[in-house]
Image (cartoon, rainbow, N blue to C red; front, side, top):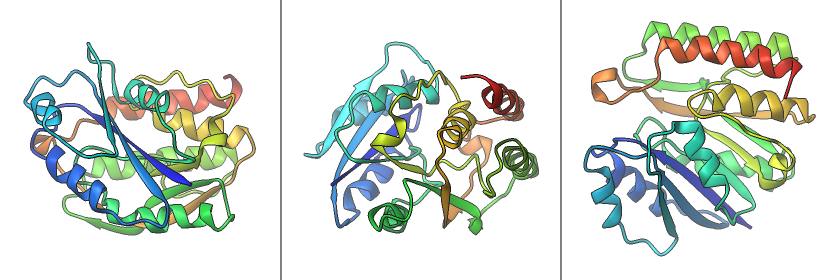
Length: 228
């Protein structure tokens, strides 16, 4: 068994070294690979990545900025693992929690795990627009898809590779979150949630998702309920 960690990156020069050090340092009961996709960063991120030397890491570079969802799709084309996890390149999510996130899959309890910030602990500033936006989107997900989850927008989405078989992903930006959630549920999978710790950051610290992405997420939740 192997875990594939997909890390979409865009302008994260302040955090990229530390997050990759944390990912590489995680000790698991299974093997691990790191797939980084740089989405045409314009700061020093690319230069930093070119100097990263880990034996279990592969790095891919976009020639134009295409968005987080597109970067994840690129990463999915190159994985060799049996289990996949998405890891943001900032420090909001802690790789030390990988073990508890993959354990329900290893135990055969589920094929899909989401790390829930709202069942766990949020540290730092909690933007009300994001807090209530996430709660509204999660509530709509429960209503439309009849699954009692608490955090649809979480970055920590973990699934067996087979879950994605025959799923056509079209997301380019942050619409990846509602699209993958909708299509996984429509295939009949039940999402198992694990509490996680989340360290939030503000826009001046590099946060990129805005209220406009929330509106788009709502659109895609409705769209993918009735179409593919």
